[in-house]
Each structure stands twice: as C-alpha cells, then as structure tokens.
Image 1 (cartoon, helix red, strand yellow):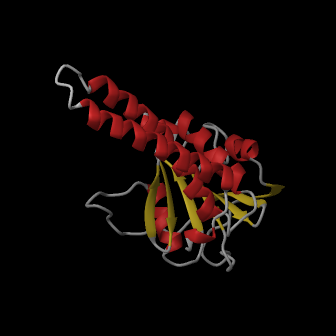
Image 2 (cartoon, one colour; image 1 turned 90 degrees about the vertical axis):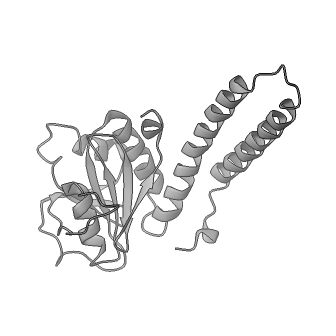
Length: 208
C-alpha cells in the first residue's frame, strides 16, 4: 500500500505538530544536562506522556490510510475498534477487497445494513448471539455477522496465535481482504493484510 496517497490533513497536522513539540522538549532536556543540579527525570516523564499521545494519533492516521482504499466508512471502523479495545470486547471484522469472499468463508447471519460504529460495537457486545465469528463488510455495508473464516496454521514470533488472529491470517493468505482483530484478553488491536499481521497502538494498549 502506498501511504503517500493518504490525505488525512487534520490527523497528519496533529502528528507533525506533536513530533515537533517532543523534539523541542528533547533538545531542552539535552541542554539541561549541562546543569549538574538539574534532575531530568521529571522532564523525561513529561516527554513520555506527550509521546504516548502522539502514538495514538499516529495509530489512527495509519489505520485510516490502510482502510480508506477498502471503504468510505474508515472513520466509523477506526472509532469502533478504539471503543472495543478500551472495553476489551473481542472482535473480528473483515473488510472485503476487490474480490468477493463467498467461496472462502462459511456464511453466518445476513445483516445488510449501512456500517456505523455503534452497530458494529453492538454486534460484538459480549452475550450478543452474533458476537462470535467475523463481521463481513462489503463497501459501506455490514453484509453479515457470525461468519466462520479459514484458519492459518502459522506461528508468528514463535507464539501460537488465538483463533481470531489465526482466522485473520488464514483469510488474508487467500484473498485481498483486510481483517481487523481486537483481543478480548488484552484489548490489543491488529490488522491482517496479504497474510501478515500488524499491531495498532490504541489508548487501551498504551495503558497496559
């Protein structure tokens, strides 16, 4: 994916301004080391807090960049997974690419509704009969829920993956789809594309 084609100006401006601010604070810290009576620990803690805020903005920026070629509802998807991550509600969301996935997944329950973050969040609310399995998004619609995806047998970073992550890899190994995963154990968010799994930093993961 060509990230140079991304044009999310507000987020990009926030990211650039944040990085400039942290850079200025680091330079101040370097100069303060010349004063032997000055303790740098407080300054480092302040820089760490600012950098964590920047990471959250960066995660939103790059996630939107990856989602935008697949659907116009990338902002709803980004909001949804941030909320699910904060609440540690597990989720598996498939965003279909150019090629339909009917032959690769075991179909679940038809939905056929316009995608909104609130509808997605309600589907994955614990106890909802549809929260197990994957939601299938085609263009700007939630096509179906509780779908079953093919599982990958790969081991990533010498770790055995959970079912949701194996399903995300399994489908993207065989298609051009993008799959979002939220872990209910940790709240961590990842996305799979082209058979690879990438972490996304959210507010929830920063607090771990």
